Image (cartoon, rainbow, N blue to C red; front, side, top):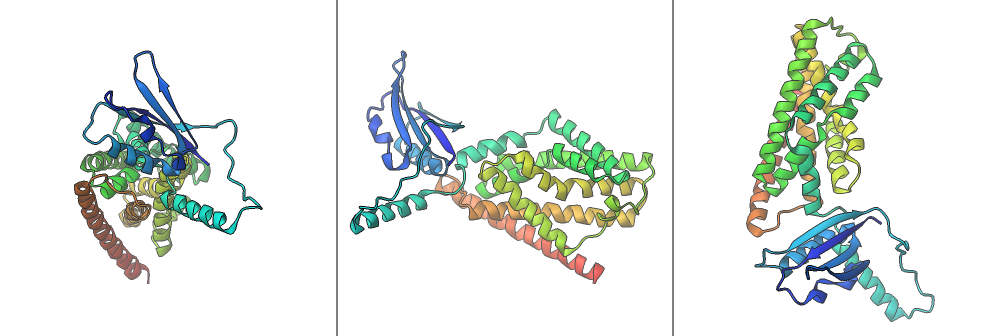
Length: 343
């Protein structure tokens, strides 16, 4: 069971610190006093309960602005937190009460990290920077070499260093929350990243001899309905990697497999003048982009990720609805193109 330490610095005029501690939701809790006479309340809780706890704390401090809540990951605790064992001598009434309590606790769990932690996690990998551009450039160079030399190992190496996961997941989260600032930053990173990658790929297509019959290139010039399934799976996996607190680097490889190689293949073929094959690779890239973002929005919605306030929630619902309509419409158009092109 993953744990989080919630460190609370209440407002200075806040007196009822015991009120902040709900024993049913916590593994442990304690109150500390510092030399500056600032009291801190520490809560140790299951990661799946942190969003509920943070919401309760936010309500407790309504109208206050001189407080701070810090959320920290916990690698391990000693002694180990054990699950409660069933008592053989437990009466039916006590057993029923315990089962009802466990059911209530399960309902509180969101089966993911908190919205606040998720937002900060994604926010860190969305911001546009020179490091992002360098990684895009390096991954494209490695991927282009892998495609030209028909080397799956090189293509996989490019997937590992490609920073494509963050901006796409950020766009999905920003759409779900109605966060325009996050959406703008994500779109900026996606546009600049893909523009740089495409430009480098076109230049390499001009400079090097491209053999379209090489499997690593040829396999990415044809689009099928199986590619739609792959794109949707990649989008779900990418979002779950964040909401479950799994290493984004691992799942990022799966998202890169859907986005990076066909994008580089498109540029290489354009640079070498093979426009018909480049159209197929470009169509495959577009299919993956649509699928990844559609799957991302739907995954966040199904996991109950919503804005805090009613006004923000209403705006987030509108953005999500529009995004789903747009992505689904584009996916239907692409599916029709695939059908009429190959059947």
